[in-house]
Length: 117
Image 1 (cartoon, rainbow, N blue to C red):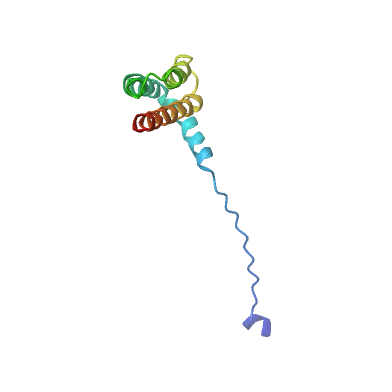
Image 2 (image 1 turned 120 degrees about the horizontal axis):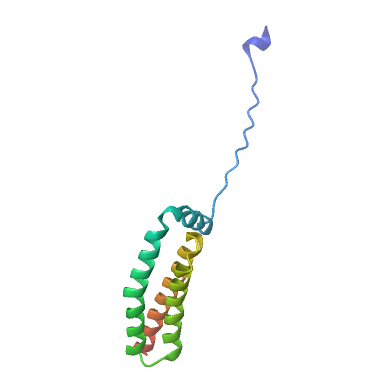
């Protein structure tokens, strides 16, 4: 009778918590955008070709004729252009676009530093 009134329950729950990194979430997003590939091609070519590259090249020329920064801006545009014209999947083109945008931002920051110094 004692066991019916006073039951002891052993509750040992060990839950697993997996934390995904920012890079793996970004790559999963890029891979999941395959159905929007044509939109990404247009977006990358329009944003990078019509806005970022001309602004970056103009900044390199205003900061002084620095051939290294100019060619780095052209390489950044080439990365975005070649991956899209080669019809690579979005798991390649979106990270390549992000890399080229980061390259352009670094070039713009270095142009500001060169101009102010």
